[in-house]
Image (cartoon, rainbow, N blue to C red; front, top):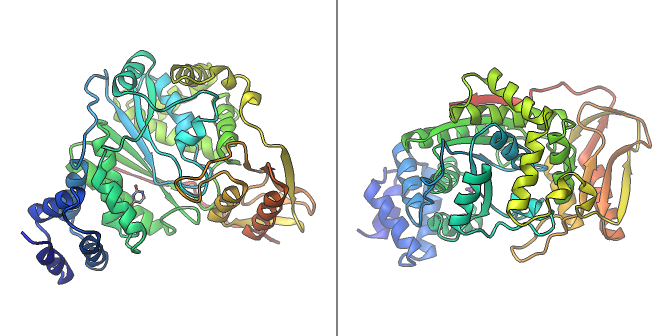
Length: 434
Ligand code: URA
């Protein structure tokens, strides 16, 4: 088999066989096929697209390119959750303890963030001493003991995707449905869960700006999951403005804690209840979404979800008392309001711009090597549809540097549109596919 022939076949619109896909993934992972040939193939795939069979073969080849995590030592149905990412997305921080408190084992691999705010691991490191550098044995033991563990992604998990994603990133071939779906699902399949609940975001802060695109991506991922024998559900949710009010690592941890105390923002709580219900049903703990939602609300009301968060933080070396005393989390020195320039309805917030404000403040990474300032970010005081008086704060900037605070303030103002009329309200959950 020759890489040249595979590139030409796809360039001419042909369908690649499983053997051809296995050949290029194996050769690329081992370093036997050069970047320039794989780049050419990615561009051919970008224009010619992939069939369902090709997408499944690519996913499986990438999932098998390294180690698969063996979760068979964990009792019960393991349900994983994945978000396609967005601004203020602190969902795992509240959702994982909620579902664990309902008896679903959470064995999750998470990543660090690049750009915008940090990833789940960065956020969790707001708890002094917290570590995700667990051995597989300790990871599995923690899940069996307390029902929850989160570890960093190992280098051996789907290494083909790691190489391919880095290449796509610099060759303008990221935004192809089959390539995104296979990239995400290869990691989820290798991470070993029995069932997968996907949170596919849509809007100005998401990868998929249009709802139709998000739906198509969700459909593609659900098909892959099912073909691979995993129960898979996708929730499509709004990311046209930040999720909840807080954007920034420790600020988001505080908001997740507040949510577990029963004081969460409406949209964030709705998302946790929707995803959590799907997880409980996939794990066989509830028959209906209504029953599942009742269970999730109960573990918030009786404090057991909050207690589970503290137990989890302690089990991974962190200071669990910060769950009850959030003032122990990192705090920024400067708090600067962003005053509304005029009265009216907040009709739009360009969501990815809010992520960039957080990045400017030091809350995200410009490069893989950047250090994150966990304490900085923004807390929104007004969300889309709210009325604001001139001079009232639209948001408060949390910063450790006055120049950066000023840059973020100006940028946040430009991201907001204030209008004379209230915007039409739209549904936060756009659909559930299974
Ligand atoms: N996230 C991934 O893991 N892969 C993609 O291709 C896009 C987003």
